[in-house]
Image 1 (tube, one colour):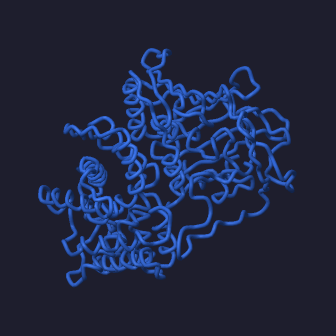
Image 2 (spheres, rainbow over the protein chains, first blue to last red):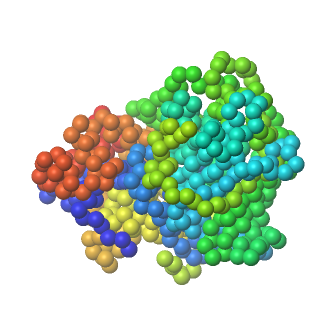
Image 3 (cartoon, rainbow over the protein chains, first blue to last red):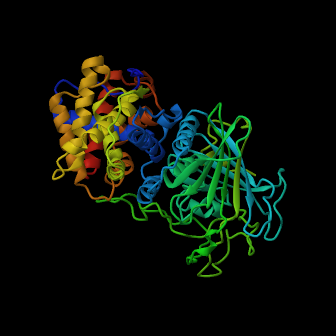
Length: 379
Length: 183
């Protein structure tokens, strides 16, 4: 049980003796709103809900561990991650429990819990495109902090048609991430994009228009717990457990996900998401082309009578991305950052055959690593 | 922390329905618990205990009445019980204030919005509309995590003044969010 920091100005103060109950109530709620805003992002809520439902399913109550203290210092973040829980709630799957699955479920739950206190982890990303025979060289890295913050740094071709550069001072990167204020991306001009950052996120980071599934290893683990049928896999290695997950229902999810989890630390060491049928079987959706000239229109702030406009169901508008490597390599028509719209309609690219996240040593990173400000002049 | 009390085994359908309720009310319950308890370390415990008590007593829930006040009632009783065990760390709100908090949450529930987060979506806007001196102390206390003494030193005020200013700012903020009145 933690104690109260009575010296903190943000800790509750004893109300004035002449304050009415209504005043005290308003003050307490005001304090709660500020704390909720900075601490209770969607991922934190998902963990609370997962802990409750694990107890309901398993018959024991397990208190969720809180993430790093830095989460408590987040600024206003309401709504930024609002779609994730809604989407998961809407798409709750019926998980058919099979022998051994309870154990696999427990392994996944332990991994989710372990990730919360593991600090920053780095995963190298490799992709096997829809037409490729095997995964290529690493195209970038994903950093996750266990508290919902993530950062992609992905190589992109310097010019249309030019193969991905090596990893040197001349390499161009697409940098995008998520913090408590939501998703962000670094624009080509070095500015910070928060209104339409999804243009920068790699195509393969989304399924059904949402990044929740493969955007980050930790997010994927939450999805596995809820939307997949789990079993112990046959490819356990020394010191690592292998969990195989297949979707409980057909859809745009990967056809299978294999996870290797360190049996000492409970951390995910490797995650492979495969599409054997591939989403290409699904009907194409029209895409409206956009460009990145000039500042994008800002979303309106919350109105006096309700929430801001825009999608609230967790499904993002399906617009084009900023440049960045695609599962099959460079865009055939080059990056789409500048210039006039070329086509009114665009087909969605198929998902890759395989995405691999493999844990590598995390270098020393600055404290502000997950903030876009730390990457405004990355090259 | 592990509780070895076994939880009853209602049907799978009931679990699915309950999960929907948990998801629908998780944000409301978190905010409510933050409103009534002092210790931030007890938020997760109370959240889980409240939900599990609700699960065990789901059969007692009167479905003709809204679920949220029932859930808040469970949370308040659990907080009160903890307060009796552990003292002022746990519960701060007296009975009249608890009732007033509950009333304010009822008002909040009537605000437009599909989700609870929608209904409190004015927080950011309301912060920007706070008077400058209120916004300043709120930023120092909640965003920068400064201590009362540090704020007082920075603003060349005494601690009591800073404390009162923060209290008033919280009230104005809550009124703005709940009633929709400009801060």
